[in-house]
Picture 1 (cartoon, helix red, strand yellow):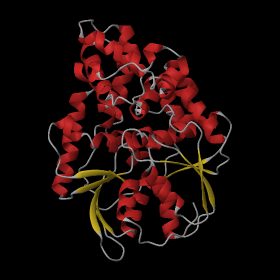
Picture 2 (cartoon, helix red, strand yellow):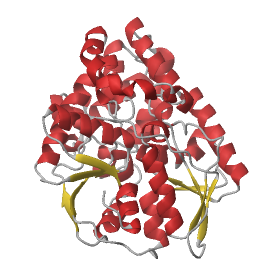
Picture 3 (cartoon, helix red, strand yellow):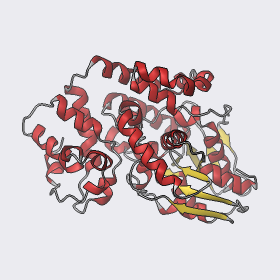
Picture 4 (tube, rainbow, N blue to C red):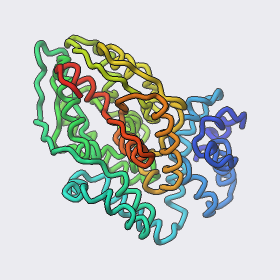
Length: 400
């Protein structure tokens, strides 16, 4: 932990209304400034106690406080460094260690996730039983999406019409195995907008889940592999369609201590920058757009998705109340802290329900699973889609 970063905080309290855990519990030590106070205690010599570790673990890392802070406190950097310290020094209970072992030996590895696909139809039915065994196992089952048919992408998707650019595309882990239709739609949209899309087959996990959980060695190993894959592909731009992945990849220079030979951009960010050439066909649908925290707060990408959706004829865009409050997904948070995540998910589902929209659009697979599960709990039904899927339907002139 860097004392200089810690001392930037003047404890003004502007972060408090934006913090999901402070909103839930009203506890000072479960607010950003409270956690920074604990960080300062540790830097000054206090060992990390189980209570301190609990407050750090309770943080979603949503970065809403970074957006709200008038002093420019780099809480994102502080909580990542703190979590590395927690993982190095804090001895977790055996059950907690076991759950984390399952999560981090499974989710960053697409081939292992693929083994779960044939059993996904059982997940919702098994959730109550697994929850009695362990709340985290129950949460994994309850969050499981209905998986679409697997779609393989070629190494190169050619541009339609005149080629305007060549880009690499991250396929990810959860996105690749649980939401393959999103990657397929992303590649089609980029191609229809005049891009050759390079999809390196040797790419794997970008390391985001590990970065956000203080597992720095695993994160560096996975990030290094990702960098090698895209540098060998010879692209100078990598487009990412998952908010958490894009956020971490944009910080590879800090994680790996050197700049990759390519820049990282979110899909909506890149399309807005490139400008449209393909014709948009009407989509008569009302859409509620959900701001994924690692897109809005960590990357500062808010206007571009709305501009892209708003340019589709006959599509009506509706705003979700409390849009800055996290849905409770937060990488692995909804698996490791299922009770708090459930409360936040229910709060977000209620807010989505007030819009009366037919379709919920998000740019992060974790958010999609989290909000869809919360909507099911509430007895409401709403279709969910990625921004890429909506654009793809409009460009191809098909209904969602």
